[in-house]
Image 1 (tube, helix red, strand yellow):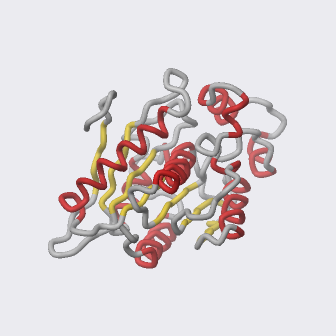
Image 2 (cartoon, rainbow, N blue to C red):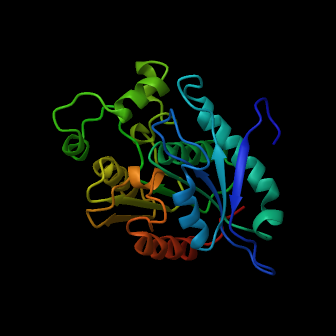
Image 3 (tube, rainbow, N blue to C red):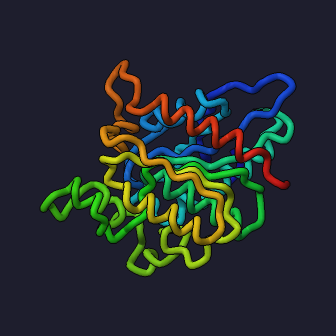
Length: 260
């Protein structure tokens, strides 16, 4: 790929002869500091199994690469995919962003960047257990952490942001964006036992209030998300995979192609 820093993409799914299928830029999780194309395979395969061609991005990781490097890398990758979409997914293939945990944050940030730069057109964004609250003050996170004051998500935010001012930047913390109008249709998936549950649902509420078409799905409690998305047991079907497939397929069908 062109650019100052070579970017690695892994493509899953198949183009359909004579038709366009959804083309998804996928961001893996890992609290901004870890993860790779293998650890992001679970959601990528769910997306591909729901009828999409999925390009997973190995984005630059903190602390070596702090905000906004990963977001800018994501936007660069999205523009490249837009140029290659006919070859990868068919003429007029609708373009989506998706991600889990920290990858959900990056997908949401890139969607905001696309809106502000007015290119390329997005058909939708898919946020799975998105990591959106740098203050780590939600009830769902406290339920997971108990009395501890340190965890990988708290540490991840500290490593990702350059300083306190970044916590107010909409591309670093999409949940703090003052303006959400103009974003594409959104699917937000979270689990009942998910530490990211409350911040995911709060973002869904804000999107709805801004007039965005948003589908919020709270799956049954025992999903193990977001950890089970990154580290499923060998040979085990990810928790709630069948339900996730159903919701993803429905979202792709409803979103349709964007105006280009």
